Amino acid sequence: MLPALGLVGAFALGPGIALADPWPVGEVVTPSGMAVALEAVVFEENPWSGESLAVVRLIAPQLAQALTDPFALRADMDWACATWGVPAAGSVAEAPDIVVVEMMAAPVARGTPDPAILQVFEQYRLLGADCIWELF
Image 1 (cartoon, rainbow, N blue to C red):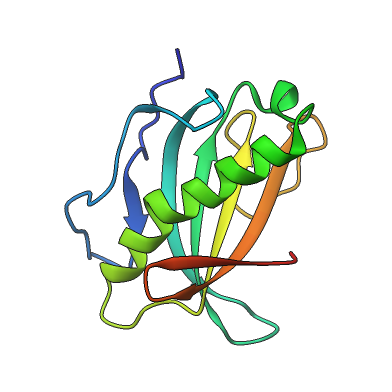
Image 2 (cartoon, rainbow, N blue to C red):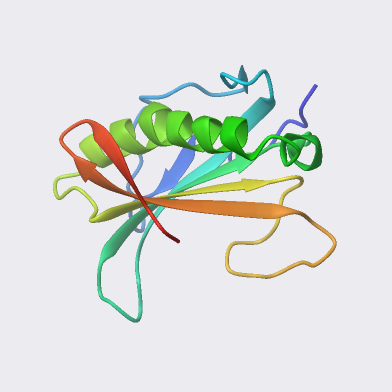
């Protein structure tokens, strides 16, 4: 069972803007069988490239075990982009340039490294409703 999080299903569009959740919330099982929960979808700008990002933040307590099969983990990341990134991109007036999927074994503050908490990231460009993997 995953911990209940105050930000599950929330996403940041800017001050005072909130929409209904167009994606699964609570505990969800990935194609590999790993339990994950959406912590947040955050929209932000890459400070170096200026590209707009939708960052899908997932809590995955079994992440360390998932590393034993990198192909299954990659498929789970692709699935997460399609499950949360595509709907999030469609929920705003201007779709983001990139979707970043962030899986973490336990909650970590956005942008704050924590060597004690395992985190993995993948980056995707959207082509319609398709997530096109890009080397992160």
